[in-house]
Image (cartoon, rainbow, N blue to C red; front, side, top):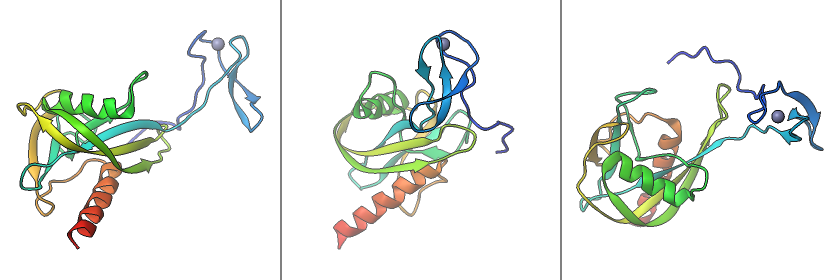
Length: 176
Ligand SMILES: [Zn+2]
């Protein structure tokens, strides 16, 4: 995928629409709206995803039906919405993409990926102890499947690849 995006930067106030100027927030110069007395920060966006297995210990993956990386596979998950806990976001995305209801989340690991073209992303990976429901590919998903470690399809995002490394390491430790 090639990208023509410029570097991500706040240029206009999201409240009043005025062009932002640089002002000192005590740490460094940041985009600032004087009438609204508001600084604009650029931070990575938080996301959450689920590690959910069947009786054979195979992991649930979702095939993307939308760009970017359409046709490649991901862990069920997505971005955390304002007003939502990270756990609630993981379970909402699981439900939206797969039709499954989960509970008993445990934080397994965290990955992050900085980008010049976007604020970047931080992903919290949760294992899901219990789940039920009838599985069907839904929002943003064209197919679903449980995969063994050896049989995994191409994974779309580096943040998910990083979490899978953590997951595999933890399982290898348990097996010892
Ligand atoms: Zn403003």
